[in-house]
Image 1 (cartoon, rainbow over the protein chains, first blue to last red):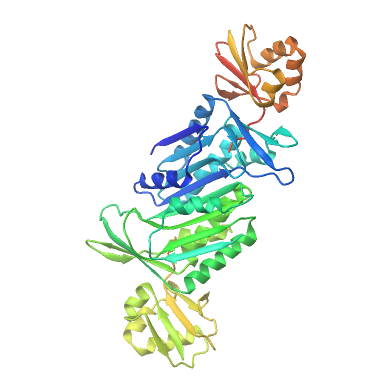
Image 2 (cartoon, rainbow over the protein chains, first blue to last red):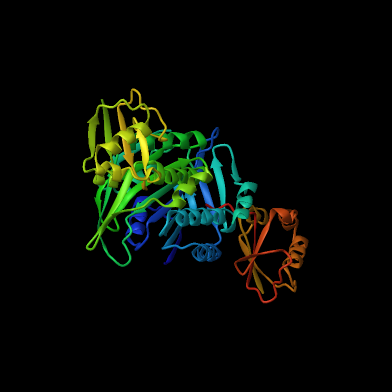
Length: 149
Length: 149
Length: 82
Length: 82
């Protein structure tokens, strides 16, 4: 039952990470992964997405979220990878992986991690196109999602 | 927005499948995968798990479940792989993958697929140990899980 | 003529995975009655219908479903996929 | 001496990512008042506290949180991770 957190500018290989994650589990019947992908903008194509973060606090905040998930559900390992820096449409921004004896725990823990990462981990996104650059606003629905837990 | 279903005795590579699945998506911000793993038994080690299925109906039933998910959520592709035959502890039994513009749809669709696969896709599991062999009973909680949808 | 399939412990109790039958049964329940009379193995396999599920032409149905014109009927315990 | 960090558009409006300040403010609100008086750029960045979040020593807190003994205070808009 270990927590692994990587905050990095480098890309990562979802497949490779997923396979290693599954192989490291014992007694677990369920593994859930979530991957976040940079979406293109509809009318004004994205040149790049820039992700800023707060070094130090980021790792601390994600660590707290993961620890809370571990206490709340019966889990094996928990993994979080989150990138910062310049990304292009189609790039993987981040992923989480959760393992559990039973599927419901793995699913709920992954959703919980995502809901908290969205609005409690110190990342900010700036979209850059040929015509504009602007910070992505936080959505009310992301803040509201926390009331579920 | 395509549905891909594979019912097979061969093993599959979760990582490889996940990477190809992500690369095939356009305009999707979220990909969720679920993997089911053969758990070992606590006291009496598993020699092997045998999965029987109903050829023809299996593909049809999973296809219906996936089509219903497509209608219910805003999704990109949906993938289901389910193995039959002899498996050992630690082997991957099955996986689902869902893509969606937003995370909630990808998560809910994956949970929906899993809940229906559990008790509406014609598979049966027989555990074989050194001292016994027996069919795995369906759980009431799996039947109850469908009431959520 | 109708094809009847058995899976999991239903198959094991009856001793074969499938058979082809001549039947005048109009629904699943009537077919089950015919099968029960064939042999004690069938009577045992079909002793508790609550423990069984049935599919007609590969679609899950209730035991009062009609089977007129159906090509295949399958009997099995509750499914355990995933 | 306290380190003050700015992220996202707060950093852009203020024109620097961080600075070290001598302050006698006892809580975040008092520190914000001092910063507002420094320069119009600060006044603009801190014009609507509802649009801002604050962390003291890397933990998210409310604006009435004390900063006595704190090493760093960070101001930023609501986070958009994931």
